[in-house]
Each structure stands twice: as structure tokens, then as C-alpha cells.
Amino acid sequence: MSGLSTARMSAIAVGVVLTALVGLLAFGIGGDEETLVGEPVPRVAGSTTDGGTYDIDEAQGKWVLVNFFATWCPGCINEHPDLIEFDTWAEQSGQAEIVAVVFNDAPDRVDDFFLNQGGDWPVIIDPTIAEDFKVTNIPETFLVSPSGRIALHIEGEVDAARLIELIEEPTP
Image 1 (cartoon, rainbow, N blue to C red):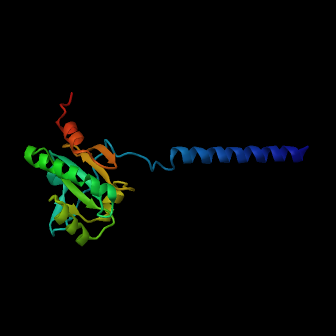
Image 2: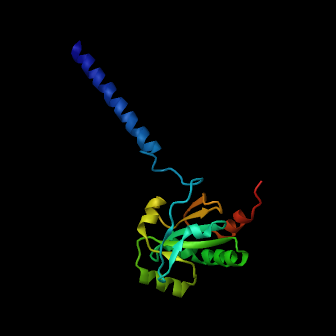
Image 3: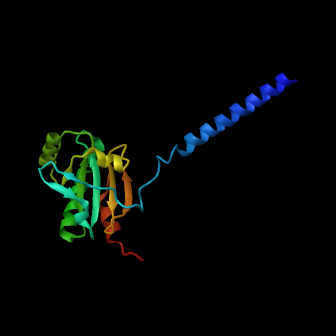
């Protein structure tokens, strides 16, 4: 009878381990799926493709759209007109600005892209920024509130009209 008890105990142990593994896969391991919304913005500073520098701390009091992109990304190409529209509104209203962060692309390709497609906001080349924001699939965009906290995380293409509407909405 002890052989049967050992087999039963082994089956139960295997079942518990499999259940735990399924739970970890279903709910994520170590919180990798955590959102940054509501958190203070990670450091966004560095050298830009035009030889300048950018530091998000200098934009305090404004909304900042942090856009991760690459010239080889179809979604990034598709959303670019919306970013130009948002940038035009941001400059006219004085309420916001855009900063782009290059994701796995060459600076000369980025410069050519902006020359051909338009847009004149700062473009940072620093792969650690994408790591700090936990960016995995571009385009990804974060809207940072004037208080320096992440207000919105967009996975995929942005919609300029919706972003403007969110910023212009009166807060209760």
C-alpha cells in the first residue's frame, strides 16, 4: 500500500507545481507587466541627434509627450503626421512639448527621416531610457503631466486629437 501512497503523493506534488506554474504564467512573473502610469517619470535626458541636449526636468509645468520610435517601424511612420499635428498644437498653446527617443536605430537614418517627413522636436539617442520605461514594442508613447508623473501610456500609434482633448479637459 505504501507504493500507492507514494504515487498519489507524487501526483499531488506534480499537480501543485503545474498549478503554480500556470498561475505565474497567467499573472506574470515578478511584475513585468506593471504599468508606470501614476509613477514619477524616469530620467529623460541626453544628447540629441542635432548635437544638442534635452532634459525633461526643464519642461516642468508642461505636458511632455515621450515617444519611442524607429525609422524602420511601420506604426512609427504611420503616427508621424499625428505627432506633427500634436507638436504644432503644443507650440501654439504653450502647454506641451514632444521628445522622441530612438529605439534601436542609427542617428543618420533618424536625421534623414525627420528631414523628409518633418518634425523638429528633440530626438534623444540613449537606449537606457527605453529600458527605464520598460519599452518592448514600438511605437510606445508616454504622456507626462506637468507635475512630472506619467498620466498615460499608449502602446501603438498615437492620435493627436485625442491627446489634445485629454490635455484640454478640465480637471475636476
